[in-house]
Every structure is written in structure tokens, then in C-alpha cells.
Length: 160
Image 1 (cartoon, rainbow, N blue to C red):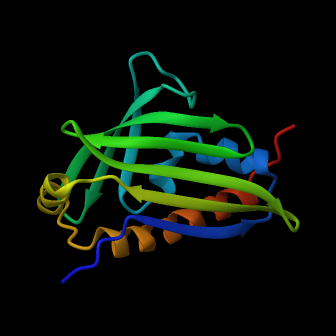
Image 2: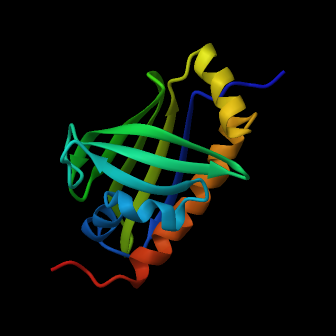
């Protein structure tokens, strides 16, 4: 029997300022560059950027399976925290958070995924995405995403 994961966190240290990292991670158009599952994001209802209440449509894939989700920004604290909630077909899916804190010669970023799916959403999700163990899958994709974010942030010019 599979264990259900309700929350995962993955962290990395990045040799860049918290503001640089926040600017990158909150620019959802870049998420597809780092995430092996996200293809892209389209702002909805006139939204143009990461402010609380702004909504977006996310396009995702796994193998040959493709699906979309709706996201709503819940927190946007520059240099510190960026968070959003995901729904699909009217079902709660997840919350994603990026916490950024000064550390060493840059900052530590902690990506958190909170599974908010009920039994129906878990079943539909497995069929839609082809991913049986969402927890293990997300841990791997979160590590890949943070590695990509780190590479981008460490090669980006500092804001200023």
C-alpha cells in the first residue's frame, strides 16, 4: 500500500541575494525552464504578475499526458516568501510555497508542497497525470526545479 505524503520540503543554498531569487521564482513564466513537469503559465483575468489574488493557468505534462491547473497567488512578500494554491476541475490540489532567507553568501530557498487533494482528486489525478506516487514524483521534480533556479540565480545580475 502506498503511503500518502501530505507535505514535502526541499531546500538549497543559492549564492544570490534573496531579492534576486524572489524575482526569479515569482516570475511564473520562468517555471517551465526549471520544472520537469511545468510547461508554462498564463496570467488570467487581467493579472500581469505575482500579487495576492492574481490567478493563472498552468500547463503541465508527464510523459505523453498533458493537463492544466488554475493557480491563485496567496502570498507575495518580496525577498522572503512566494506562495500559491492550485485547483483543477474545481478540486483543491495543492499549495506551493517558496521561503527565502539570508544564509552564508546568499540565501536558502525552501520549496514546500502541501497535498490538498481528497480521495476523488487523488484518483482523477492519477488517471490524468499517470503519476501513481505523487509524493516521490514531486520530491524529485522539486529538487530539479531548485537546481534550475539556483543555476539561473547564480548567473543573474543582482537587482539594483
